[in-house]
Each structure stands twice: as structure tokens, then as C-alpha cells.
Image (tube, rainbow, N blue to C red; front, side, top):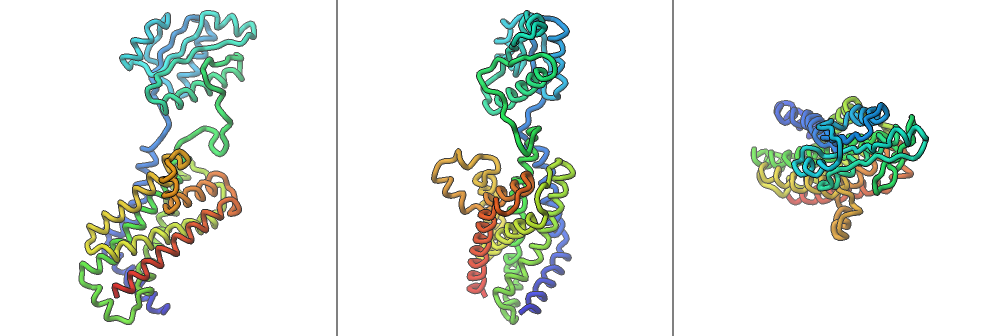
Length: 367
């Protein structure tokens, strides 16, 4: 059995080497996608158009304005003497936020009295508004600790303490989800096209005439792509660390184990699709629909699962990326051991076993 599995795997590797376009896509696509999405997908907000109403015109007020501008988030668009013109500027979308410093700013700070600055912002986009407000509160709080004792006058509490990502860099939260998304899509597509390619080229009939059994054919098809996907995963993790400064605080061994389980499930699902589809085009479409959309929308990658309707929350339990992203963030960002995420690993193992079993049954029927 082992010899036949190895022979099929060597044959698949040789075929993959001759088909250099497929090999290049499998090795290069995860890296390219990680770089594109890692830079493009970001919840950070920059170049915020800021209006300043400085009614104090003192050195202390200028230092406060400079703190906003030096943060790298805000760009000063205009300076006003009073706040009556703010309504027109917001309506014309000339500014997105405004900092209003009262006339008694210097006098109250010199007297060590609690002092407030008013931060006005456009709330039409609530997510952006919350992000911008967080920036403003952080900047004022830093000035409070250093010199002034200033309190920002907004109807919100102080920003909470953030663990694992003190700077609130969205890339640190996004990249683990992106890695799951990229690996799932690429692994499913790769194996889904493998068996269909045999059908279209007419070599499936030749395989039926050989002593190779269905399980051996399945393993021979899956093993080469598992190796290629593992190399891609390692390269993607390295790029995430080198380019996006994503810390890898946990065990690399456990990270490899969880990734292999996740990839095994993806490869098994791809082979199952290949036993259904008769053309590479159909296999490609089925792979995208069954891997990309669930991973993107139902895994907790972008949208919190807790905020979804109950029916969708139940549906997320059959999405393997849900468990992989949770385990990946626990290992990479928190550095915790399997005692905290063993349930995710068990779920990935069950998913991989089920889809591989289904793929084997379908392959047996085909042969």
C-alpha cells in the first residue's frame, strides 16, 4: 500500500512540476493575497480632516493642536475663531472632526483645575466615528499624563486597557484571519481541480485499470498539495511577522499541528468537490462558493459571531475557519497552550475526518 501511495504521490509531483503555472499559483497565490489583503484591509483611519477652533491662542493650546497633528492620524484643514462655522464645514464634508479649545484653557490648566476640550465629529459613519473618537481620547489622555490634567468632554468612558495589541493595530487582528481565508480557498481549489483534471484528460480510465485503490489515490492526490500548502503557510506566517509585525508568541509546533489539521480538512473538501464536478470550471466555482464566502462571512474573521442571528450562529459551527482563526489567534497573539484551545483542535480533527471519509466514499464509487 505504501509503495502505491508513494508512486501516486511522485507521479502527482512530477505532473505538478510540468504544470509550472499551477505550481506557481499554488506557491505564489497565498503570498500575493496575504500582501494585498494585509495592506488593503485595515480598520485604521488616517488623514482625518480636522478643523481647529482655538479660542485661547496660547502656547498650551498650540501644544494640544500639535499633539493631534503629530499623531499621524489627523490633517489640519482649517483654523476658526469660533464654532459657528462648523456646521457648514461638516455639511460640505470639508472636515470630519473638529477640536474646540476654550478661551480659559491656559488659565484653568495653569491653576491645575480640571479642563475640558470639545471634540466634535461626524457620526454618519459610526464605525469610523468610534475609531476617530478613540484616537482623540488617547491623544488627550497622553497630554493629561504628561502636563495638563485635561479631560475630554465626550459622552463616553475612557478607552479600556487593550491586551495583546496595545497600539490597536488592525493588521495584528486581521492577518490571522487572512491566513485562514487564504489557506482554505487555495487548498480547496487546488485539490478540487486535481481529480477533475484527470477526468478531462481521460487519464481517470487508466487509473481504474491500475491496482491503485480509492484510498491510495486519494492520499496520493492529497499529500503533494498538503506539502505545498504547508510551505505556503510557513511563508505566509513569516511575511506576517516580517511585514506586518504580527507577533508569534506561542509554540510553533502546536501552530504547525493546528495548521495541518485545517489544511487536511480543506484538501479533503476539495477532493470531495472534485468527485462531484465534471469540469474544472464547475469545480472552481463550487470551491469558491463553499470556501471563500463561509470563511469570509461566517468565521468571525470580519463580523463577530456573537452579533449574528441565532440561525447563522448555529451555521458557523460547520465552518472550519471559525475554529482555526480562534486557535491561531490564541497561539500567535496570546501565546497560550492547547489547554485554552483544545476544543478548536478537536473540532478541526472531526471536520477533517468527516470530509476525508466522504471524499473516500465518493472516490470508491467513482472507481
